Each structure stands twice: as structure tokens, then as C-alpha cells.
Length: 226
Image (cartoon, rainbow, N blue to C red):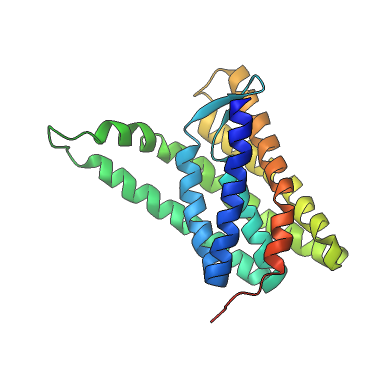
């Protein structure tokens, strides 16, 4: 149960920092969060843990917060701003991958202690990043489109939870299948791969659903947009 409770704390910390980032920096803080979250999610995802007897990867919590950001941008600033954030996250992940691959090329000095750790974490990054880029690109634009459609069908302020969870339900399924197929198929035995796929989707959706109150809080925040 330790991983479960630390996971709850981890989610609260992530969403609390998201609210703080938005409160302090406004709309620009949302773009900054997107950039940070895309990179951190792809670093965390190389670590596997066990919860309730199932194998799962880290990175799902902070990755789910990306959907929170795009939905908030769509809600308060419109579809155009949400799409701009998607492109910003896409560029951030590409840039981070290129830079870190070049870092690994440098020949380390004989007393260096970092190369092995960097190789372990970022050596997998091209395949992980490819899966993440494809999944991110497709699912985020699907999320934005579905959210915009639901915003027209369910426009009430008290229907925000429908727009948020409705768009996430489909977009994160698409994201999970795309990412796990490209990044992990062949890297793990099939039974482990199915567990990762299942838990990746379930964790992302549960975390996104749990983040709904934070979306309501963020929507009602008065922030400095100057």
C-alpha cells in the first residue's frame, strides 16, 4: 500500500504545483507547465513500479496534468490557445530529446560519475520520445477537438466536468495505445506489456478525473495576464 499512498501524495503535489504555477504566472505559466510536464513525464516513464499486483510506469500523473492544462486553456482562452500549447509541448519534447542525445555523445572524463546514469535514463529516450510524440500529437489534438465539441453541446459552467472527463476518456485511450505500442512493445514480455497498457490508461484517466476539482479552482482563479 506504500506506493498507493505515496501516489496519492504525488498527485496532490503535482496538482498543487500546477495551481501555484497558474496563480503566479497566469497563461504563460500554463505554457511553462506544458513544457516541463512533457519532459518530466518522459523521464519518469522509464521507472516501473508495482501497485495492487500490477506493473505500471511512472509519468502518468504529470502527463495527465497536460490534459488539465489544455482543457483549462480551451475553457478560458479558446481552442486556438489550447492548440498553441499542444505545439509548444511538442517542440519542447523534440528539443529535449535532441539535446540529451548530444549530451550522451560526449566522451566522459575518467572520474565522471554521471554518464552511466544518464545513459540509463536517456538512452531509452529516442524510442520513448517517438512513442510519446506520436501519442501526444494525436491525442492532444483529439482532446482539444472533443473538448471544443462538448463545449458547444454542454456549455453550462456546471458542466465543466462533462467536458473535461468526456474529452479525456477517448483521447487518453488513444494516447495509451499509441505510446505503449511504440515505446514498449518488444521491450517487455506480452503479459507485462498488457499490464502496462491497462494501468497506463486507467491511471491517466483516474488521475484526470481526480483533477477535475483543481480545474474548477483554476477556472475561477483571478490571475495577472499582463
